[in-house]
Image (cartoon, rainbow over all chains, first blue to last red):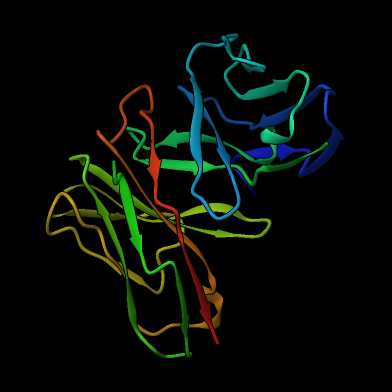
Length: 112
Length: 116
């Protein structure tokens, strides 16, 4: 059983469209992170959300932490080919968040 | 701006061979960790360290050993490679173990390992 379930697993859309991907769990977390990974590289942190209901924006990307701090969403407006990549959510476990656990990811392809 | 450096980039082993994946960071980070990434499985934590001389197991530690003799280096050892260890391995570090709010985890560019 995965601690973090990400959906959809794959998403392919046309440039200029909007999209939302999700990260869900039955557990409550103190914080949640989103990373993006490009082929041949390691993941790169996009954002950390901490407060239930929190919304953070990073240019065309909008991140939301669920009110109960069990889930999160990532919305991309007017997707561009540069948004292509694997999007991963991650949460910390153990006392000091020593164990960072990742979801299985959403592989996003933006078609020019 | 080296960050986290992993070597080698690619490696092919025969079943039963041993090898060490190298990881070094130049950011004076206390926390370092190793993940493996497999299709459909995401990133899974193998081992981690919260400081020199301190290591602990992650989710999938079997078949792997680690040590942390210095702040900078965190090598991952495969004592007897098995085909199930074919994967992409990532080393990552951050300045502190974590706290209430996770700090940014910096990743290396990965080592692609094939065990035949």
